[in-house]
Length: 312
Ligand SMILES: C[S@@+](CC[C@H](N)C(=O)[O-])C[C@H]1O[C@@H](n2cnc3c(N)ncnc32)[C@H](O)[C@@H]1O
Image 1 (cartoon, rainbow, N blue to C red):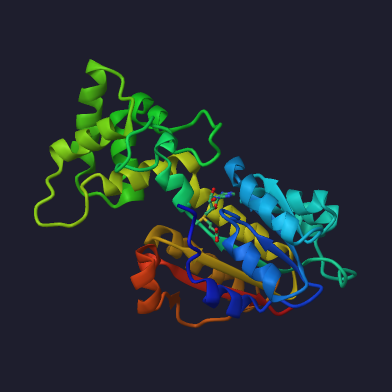
Image 2 (cartoon, rainbow, N blue to C red):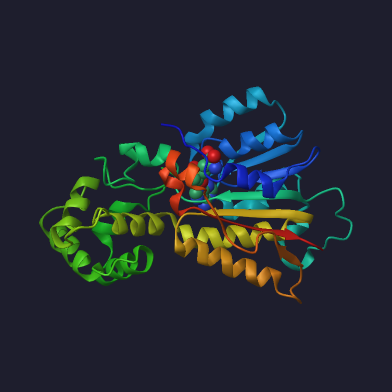
């Protein structure tokens, strides 16, 4: 199944692309956001994704909108170097101290969007090892080639590190029990598959009346750890804020509270009077999906959109 973009209308409303504008889609995925931006104005899109399997979606868009979209298979924390290389922003921007809007009237970026987390393609492909509902190798790396993966997490980390990560990134109160079960299981044999990991978690956390699978929180934590998702998000949005042109917009869609907290904190700092560049919040209250959207796409239930605009 391809990915259904979440909060698409809301993102587009906040971004309000204009002709001649330059936009960055920092999480290309199946290209749903990029396509909507390209359709809405005669602008250019620089798309980024760390997962090379998205290239096929890019190829389709590139045929439809020749010379208007470029894809970079990279982490979005590298957003500045990606745009430097493409001459969208000058090289001096790499060094924050050198960065000045003076003389930058014809360059810079008019809007940057982040729709973080995993795509349906990644979740639905058992071979990627993201889902406890599909059997597959313990991988969970968005890059697909990274040697840091879910197998490293369960088979090599110390028990305490496993417990702390599952607690901090999964909000799992049974983290110590789960870590102990993982370590006991791996003493007998290497833990190889998603089903094996899910069964180990389920053997020590009982579902009770909850609709949520006991493996949910552990899988979320391992995925965040493997991909350094929170570190990437903080670095990515801070770097993005530094390359926006005047009136440029930064829009971020998140899917759980750890991500949203980072966005809220970074945006608050950027909007603080007296900071080097002035930003203002575009939406005072966080934007959530309508019940209509949630009915069609339950994944939208936890989505939150925050947006800021650069004033000077
Ligand atoms: C939720 S999907 C985006 C879906 C997209 N908006 C669409 O409409 O199809 C998130 C995408 O971001 C990518 N991604 C997540 N973290 C990333 C990072 N740090 N750097 C680059 N890409 C990342 C994932 O590989 C995935 O393809």
